[in-house]
Length: 216
Image 1: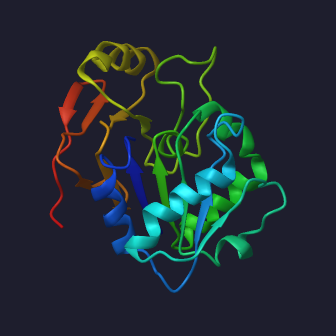
Image 2: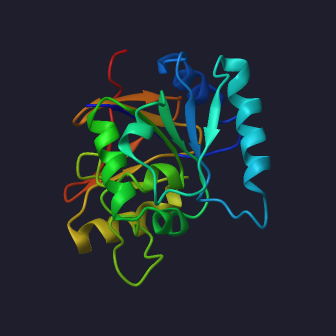
């Protein structure tokens, strides 16, 4: 199996520790694949997003970064050429709309074959069971369900507690709530390491529990 790094979002300063951790687990002999499709290219072009990502990761030793903005005709063989896949933030619904049946399948196969996936905010949420924790659509929208049957809530704050709890009880779901500047690193099923200083919470039918740190 591969590895997941799931970030609650945040700006460059908030994400600096997470990005450094990501660089430390990357195979720098292979390029990084960047997928910016959660963003709005009319507000910020994909090329400017790529330039920003290069500014973030080049100083961390990740020198080769390839961007994909079209996913329909990609193959597993192409994916396996990359050290990791980085899914940046924006609109979760928009990002998921670009993930057709074919790309969902090969991204899961990439992970099963040992690939690393770094999801930030929307890029993390699509890797969960559903993306509709805050009822942003009329029905639950299925995520890729790579995160051990958990859904994810990013940018978590205390005022989100009642909304997430209501969703969990109504839908019999499990939700991991990630604040900005904090990430989970998953290497085995339900085995997580927290990257960052803020607590991460798990909501289930028994209520809310703080997720304990796992020794590095």
